[in-house]
Length: 237
Image 1 (cartoon, helix red, strand yellow):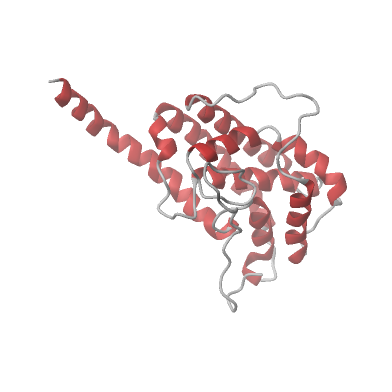
Image 2: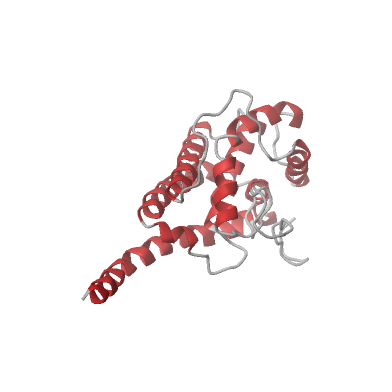
């Protein structure tokens, strides 16, 4: 009887699990075209501005994009804390992960706010960052990962300034409208990223997520993977 009850409960939960999984993966699939695979925050901004070589920037779509991901992160928080096994459900593509996808979106928001304080969609980007950092923190806690809830005023991040400058170089390749120089923007970027980096890195290592750029180390030796880009002749920089 105990066995039958257990099987019945598992079957009853499957529809809820797969519904949450499908909602999660739909947005990740859409992100892959905008942020590359594996997803990377600077790549998201670069491709959105380059707009498939159309000559017309689509940065005006970012407010709606960040609002969508604010809701997506809230949905992940509710579903993945309630049904913790979802945390380990892998994306159909080996080059994608819900962890690195959310991290890429948060990094793009932090980078945009830091480099372009006047042009960046301040409210949608900040709300997305808030929803994302809560998501990483709550999911990490549900997994038993201890993440500091109170950050020191001078807290640092693992990402280096050299990596940050390389990302700015990627944006300059597509003439992204940068307002601040890297040395001035770096402090602001650190101030945003310090809120979510620790939890994001811990979850990525725990679930063995694809080793995307800016996503920390893994439990096995693995080189970080830059986003794959289309073959020559396809309209991407």
